[in-house]
Length: 54
Image (cartoon, rainbow, N blue to C red):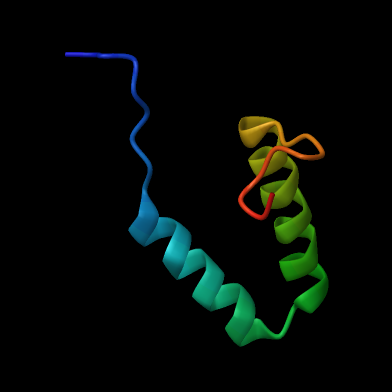
């Protein structure tokens, strides 16, 4: 049954992150962090004055 939710392979993501950190490829880590941060900002849609600290 497809209820419209997406399944996330957290174990696969975690293993990939471990491999990247272990390889010392910090340029790749930074690249992945930018992609993640952009996706997070798009999902949350933050605006000045609307947040946890206000």
